[in-house]
Amino acid sequence: MKCEERFESIYNQTPEGVAFCPYRVCPIGAHSDHQYGKVTGFAINKGISIAYKPKQNGVIELVSMQFDKRAQFHITQVPKEKQNDWADYLRGATLMLSQKYPLHVGLCGVIEGSLPIGGLSSSAAVILAFLSALCSINGIKTSKNELILMALNAENKYVGVSCGKLDQSCEVYSKKNHLLYLDTKDDSYELIPQHPDMKPYEIAIFFSGVERTLQGTAFNMRVDECRSAAYALKAFAGMEYGKFPETFLRDVPYDVFEKYGHKLPDPWRKRAEHWYSEYRRVEAGVEAWRKGDLETYGRLSFESGESSIVNWETGSPELKKIYEIMKTTDGIYGGRFSGAGFKGCCMALVDPSFKESIKQTVTKEYLEAFPQYKETFSVHFCKSADGCKIK
Image (tube, rainbow, N blue to C red; front, side, top):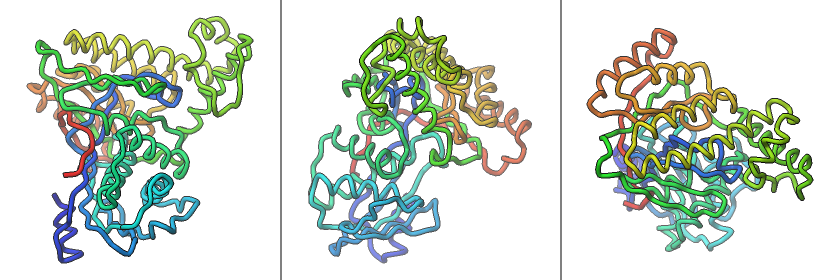
């Protein structure tokens, strides 16, 4: 890996370890985890690697191969407020870990991402890989659920992104050749093996050429719109309701939405419509996966993408174009834009025998529409993978 070579060139020694966390894709279940929805997902065999070595003086010093600025701070002197750079994910992770366990040892390291940033939960992968390394050198053993919650709190409470636990859960729980089926309300999950009669598939990533961040986008606004819908529906139905931040669509039965949804402002109604329909799609998709019916699972993923555009109202022009191309390209079972959908990439489940024609078709049609991304658009084919670990 390049991060190991870079580490040796900077520090003139070999790293003590390499922490790796995979990226994730969510074919069905997007934009629902923050309202305690159900999700499906895979980890993929591309992700974030950190080559590292302990520093006994407690200093954290990390170089990113994607960003210019070096991250440097002491494990006992993490700023209480975010500093608005990429290292906020590391600071938040350190703070959350130190609130549960004593930290004595820092680390120096080099971070490398194996795919372009945007739509693959790279922020969660950075946090989890870093937490894994920091735990290892401090002799800390955590449960998988602990690791997920610390990573989630780093984003929610420190960085300020109102995401749910989809990204972290996929990147920790996933298992190669299995579909992760997770209920984000009670954290129960199932790893459903690939059916022996299922057609072969790989996971394609179509990077639009435009990187994105959730900070400064409408992501947090969408979450608030869902909560607003849930709060209003409870009031209309005479249900008991408490604090706004503790209000979730999962607590509102669908028949309440059917009865009172027309009273909601249009944006709130659309966000709720996406959430309820996505909940049903996940359950239908899981049954299709159990039966080895990849065509139905893929079709539901396309429907998820359509609802994200129409009801969730996200998707940059670039991602919408890729999504439209995917729907008419032979060899693609299904797919959608990956992540929040503001920039970044689209993912698809594809027939491996069509890989070359898929790459040619999508590339040609996309660059005809957006020639300005000729140098940055890229296509990658991946496979499912296990969750994060220390190598």
